[in-house]
Amino acid sequence: MNSSRNSAQDKKIVIAIDGFSSGGKSTFARMLAARLGYIFIDTGAMYRAVTLYGIEHGAIRNGVPDRERLNPRRQASDIYVNGECVEEKIRGIEVSAAVSSVSSIPEVRRKLVALQQRMGKDKGVVMDGRDIGTVVFPDAELKLFMTADPKVRAVRRYEELRARGDDVSLEEIERNIRARDRADQEREVSPLRMAPDAVVLNNSDMTLAQQMEWIEPILEEKIRGI
Image (cartoon, rainbow, N blue to C red; front, side):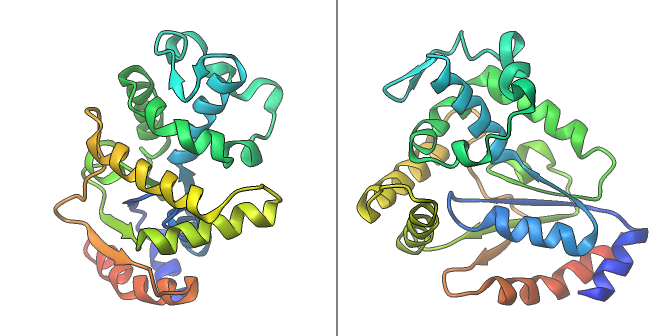
């Protein structure tokens, strides 16, 4: 992707990547950003961080969030107390089971969307999530919608969690993924939708290298067009 990387140095764009959970968006987006010299922004991790905060501070019980206590105007800045790295914690099954409920809270969504828009205002970003191409950056130069068969996504997630030492079952992971798919698509605030001008990437049978090869001509065309 050398030609795309050289072009992107002069013509920076916003690359918005949306799609279902455990579809490989973050891995793909991180690699793409690195090869272009762009900033990678994982918006799902932002919602997971709010969810983790709620769990650890008693604002989420049995997967049900206390909307008032999770109001970002009061405590969102406390998510990163002492600069603690919570990357491992936010990927656990408990956070995964509750994050859709938290991300449906209008106050949480408004706060984080505004932050995401500020982070990408100068372009040169690859941002992934659920509503990037429809709400956060509806004018993004390149929009992708990533998907994969739920069973494939479940196996990927299962292998990731088992490698970390988490005691989970494949059946539990698939149930969680299907439940998140429904919750993401049915929530009232910023539901998961494919932007009309998005390009679909179904990576059910694709390696990461194949995905990088697939995006090359699309990226070249978008950069030449600006």
